[in-house]
Image 1: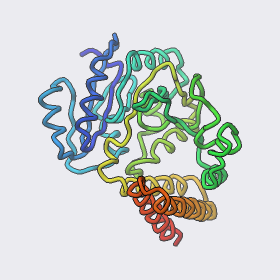
Image 2: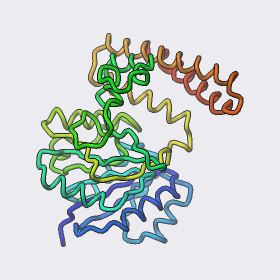
Image 3: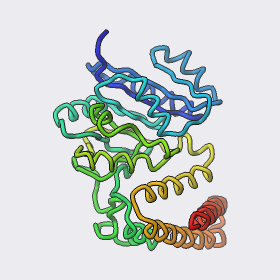
Image 4: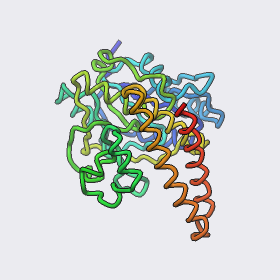
Length: 313
């Protein structure tokens, strides 16, 4: 049996249309490297499995009986794959020409890189933020006060979202967001798979931190590009997924910080969401054409405040 150079893992939950676009973009890639595609489906009920069976017979499909979350589903994919490299691609990502090939070559030429990620574009082809600094109390405060928006080019205030940088150069970063990774299997074996206590969100920050702590470099590689449409699964339950993001961020905080820091984090979270709630409530009154969006965002912030307040005790 021939060895596999690259395993491509896609986790999907009720994202059939996005999944088709994603798979087509991967299959249309021209590459000389031997690869396999593994789709891990988290109990979709939108016809995804039927499309996979009919249109993509060469794709390995793993059907979960429940929605096991992003980290656990990816770990299942890792266990069922055999590539020297493992490429994790969200179902709502379209891979552009030569993206995978260029990333593979880069990883081959840089043996100390554990994770690399491509330049991520929005559907309008404008560069999206796809990497970030590790979260700190200071950069959470800067976000709460919108200092990173007022002074976007200043590293002091924009360190978390890296607003001071144009995403146009190869660069070592703290975190590459989890919509698209190419990871060295040797590194996965050393540091272990994704932490399954993260249901969705946060696992990317945690994993990248573990790569750094084990001496592996985490690299943003803009000579490869992909489009991230966003919300392939989260659009199915936006309020739930927003709270899941808050829970995941706090889970990461609890994993690496003491109790005093945890309390401080929650206080800043409440402060941040309170300011957002007030701002969106004002928009309900002053911007009638955006009222439904503003009402949704007020609800989102109030739910987040309620969750953070309960988590204090």
